[in-house]
Amino acid sequence: MLQVNYIRENKEKVLEGLKVRNFKQPELVNEIIALDQVFRATQTQLNDFESEANTLAKQIGDLMRTGKKEEADLLKQKTTSCKENIKKLTEEISEIEPKLYNLVVQLPNLPYHLVKNGVGAEDNEVVYLHDKPAELPKNALPHWELAAKYDIIDFELGVKITGAGFPVYKGKGAKLQRALINFFLDSATEEGYKEMQVPHLVNEASGFGTGQLPDKEGQMYHATVDNLYLIPTAEVPVTNLYRDVILKEEDLPIKNTAYTPCFRREAGSYGAHVRGLNRLHQFDKVEVVQVCHPEKSYETLEQMNNYVQSLLQKLGLHYRVLRLCGGDMGFTSAMTYDMEVWSAAQERWLEVSSVSNFETYQSNRLKLRFKGATGKTQLAHTLNGSALALPRILASILENYQTENGILIPEVLQKYTGFDRID
Image 1 (cartoon, rainbow, N blue to C red):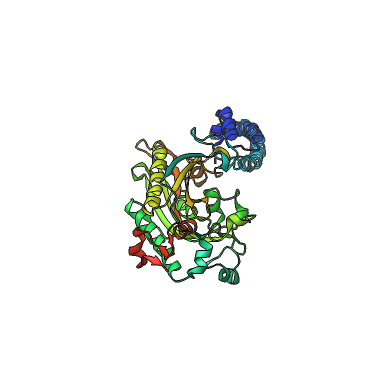
Image 2: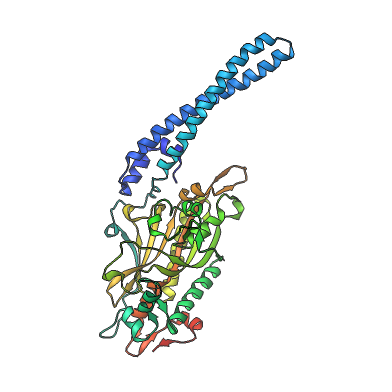
């Protein structure tokens, strides 16, 4: 969430940033500034009346102590007037504050200066391309046909149990899934991330803190009886571990990792591009989250970017890195890198990770601060990344490692799977 004083003092910069993001409601900025002006004027009046009331109370006390009751009674009449004004202005502020707050939360984060203007995915920048596409046998199959051929993933059984987008992994498919989870978690802990096990449902405050609410409530599964939400990513519960917390500067950076299932309604997602594992309602993911000093967050973003790439390299996958344009970034992000692997059988790129710096956008909502040597508190920066999301990684391994005699297992996973091929 942007800070009101920043919006007020940097109006043109805010408008320019919203333009880069292709934001459709720039008029909110003027509404926020106008309402903030009313709020501050009302607050000033309230402060003046409260100060006057305190002064009168002291004067009345002095007069009563010296026996000047009549003069004290005259001042008490002024005190009554002050109290009436204080009550009226307090009520006005209690009405203005939520209106101002509700306007501010509608503004997305402002983009970092490297983020370019753009509307959608076609405007994203390719900043790195790794390796070449795998050479596949003739008549190579997409992963959903490979899954059926080797009986390792059953999409129809998932439909029977729950519905479309909830696959059942079987035999070596399930073991490969578990191998990927363990490989990603072990890699993260070796990189210095502390593993956490977190709830898979969160309350509204947690959803709001990381920016899923009110922006993405339509994409989240809502358990209405208890008013809880199934998590769309481990980012939500992990980052909320530090909600309403004041950290010590020397404790930064904080690095956490977590494996969780993720739940997304993906409303409106249809078509051939979402076949098989390409887009699911439930999927597994290992997430990495950092809380760091504002001066080091973009250095940290590059480190996280390189770390995710190292996983893709160890898996031997052809991939590219995109820096998202303003119009394609998430609501809360200041800058995002997407990693996409090449699906040789489908002949298309599949997104497998997003690594984002949110600067103070989440921490302002979370009231996540740190205290330096001077004793002054300030907002920390938060970052997160998929390291990695499993469905499309699994799909890419099946497609890119297929041979005429089965599917090979990347060498780095074989100690986890206990087998070197699926046949």
